[in-house]
Length: 366
Ligand code: M6R
Image 1 (tube, rainbow, N blue to C red):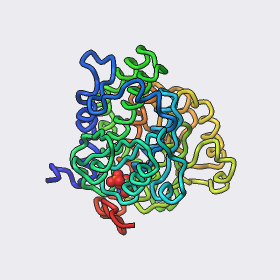
Image 2 (image 1 turned 90 degrees about the vertical axis):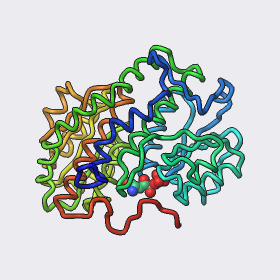
Image 3 (image 1 turned 135 degrees about the vertical axis):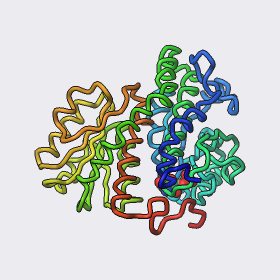
Image 4 (image 1 turned 120 degrees about the horizontal axis):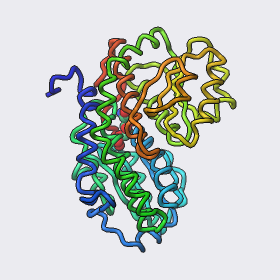
C-alpha cells in the first residue's frame, strides 16, 4: 500500500505532481487563459460585496491560509485576516454578513476549524470550505466547498494536502481578482502558464533528492534550527519549521527576515543551521542582508533559491534550487525540498516518520 516507498510520507511527497494536476483539473480553461470555478459560480456582485475575508484553520492548513493572504490581497485587493481556528472561535470576532469566511482543512473533521466555521456562520458570514475529504463534517457545514484533489493523506505530517491547498487558494485569488476587476487578463494567463507547468517542472526537485539527503549530516547533533524568509517565504518558513519539528523532534523557529534584529539574532552562534528562503525576487536584496547578518555570527546557511539565482549563492554555505517560476507559484514548489529534508533528517534519527510521537492525523477533540 506504500507503493514501494519506505513511508507514506515519502510516497505522498512524490505524489504531489499528480495531486497538483488533479486539483487544477478543469478549473483552468482549455486555452489556459482563465480560471473557471464551476462549483462556486460566483458573479461580480458576489465578489464586490465582500468587505473582508476571514481565513481560519489549524497547523499546516493555517500556514496555507497565511500564503492565501498574500495571494488574495495582491491579486484581488480584498482585505484578508488569517487566524488560528482555536483563537478565532473564542475572541468574539468582528465577523458579519459582509465577511467571507474561508476554512481550510485536509480532513474536514478538525474540531476547532469546524467550530470556527459554525461561529462565523452564526455571526452571519458567508462560508467556503477548502477540504480534501468529500462529505466531511466541514464540507457539509459550509455554504460552498472547493475540494483539493490530493487523494488520501495517511502520514501525520501533511505534504500533498498543503501544496494542493496552495493551488486551490491561488486559483481562488485569480478568480476573485478577475471578477473584482483588479487583475488583468495578461497577468492571469501569465500566472496560470507557470502554475500549469508545476506538475512537470517540480519533478526536477526529485532529481536533487540525494543532494538534499546528504544535507542531513549538517543537522547531526543540532537541536535548534532557524527558518527565515520574507513575504510569502515567511509563510513557507513557518511550514518548513513545523514539518521539521513534527517528525524530527528538532526545535525549529521561523522568523521573518526583518525581525531577526528584534530578538532572534542573539540565538545565532557558530554552526547553528539557518534555512534561508530567498525565492521572492522583490525582496531578494533584503534577504541577502539578513543572510549576511546570520553569516556574520557563523551560522551554517542553507539557501533556497529559484534556478538562475546569481546573488544569494554568493552568501550561503549550500544551496537548494527550485525551478524558476512566478513569485506566486514558486512557494508551491519551494516547500517540497523542505518536506524532503525534514523526512530524511527524521529517518536518520530513527523516528517513526508516519506516526510521530504524541500526534494524531486528525484532531477531533479539543
Ligand atoms: O485536517 P486538517 O487540515 O484540519 O488538520 C490541521 C492540522 O492538524 C494539520 O495540518 C497538522 O498541523 C499536520 N499534522 C501538520 O503536518
